[in-house]
Amino acid sequence: HFGVDGKLYVGHGDGATAAFADPLALRSQDLHSYAGKILRINDDGTAPGDNPFDDLTNSIRSKVWIYGIRQPYRWNFHPTTDELFIGEVGWDTWESIKKGIRGKNYGWPFYEGNLPQPLYMAQFSQCAALPSSAVTFPIVTWAHTDASPALPGYNPSFLGDTAIGGPIYTGTAYPQLYSGNYFFADYVAGFLRRLVFDA
Image 1 (cartoon, rainbow, N blue to C red):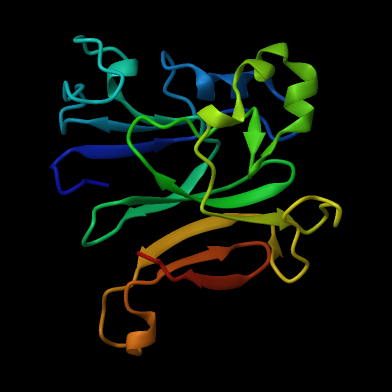
Image 2: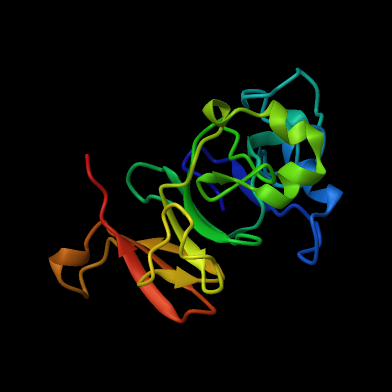
């Protein structure tokens, strides 16, 4: 999508397999890889020069806007604030909605949802090097349908398996109640829900 700043924002998944704790997912934490990022570029593909990790060249890191994401499956800008909202397809346990903030690390694959990702933590020692204080966590999470009810944050009335980010509604065809709400879905669970933003 193009932002109001005229720059092109590009979502890029981690490119790892979902079948196991794939070391390719670690690229999401590497600023020298396109994988697991939202990029911000000029319309000719070059780095704008004012991104958070710019190194005064046209390098990959100079194009990175946010990192540490898995699969940004449908994302949009807020039509009045230009804030970025991302539906992120999770891996083993959690789906989420994230607010994309310039220069932030969203923790994948060391964190999934609001918690450390135990399978990646157990397999890759570098996971312990990323403290939770350095991670920007989702604004909404929901557990997978086969997740353990003992998980912190588990809600049996809010389960799914494939997040799909949607729009912020600004039209007039539906009641005022829905104006400014963010709509999102879960493909597997078959639901459509909304977020109402506070101040």
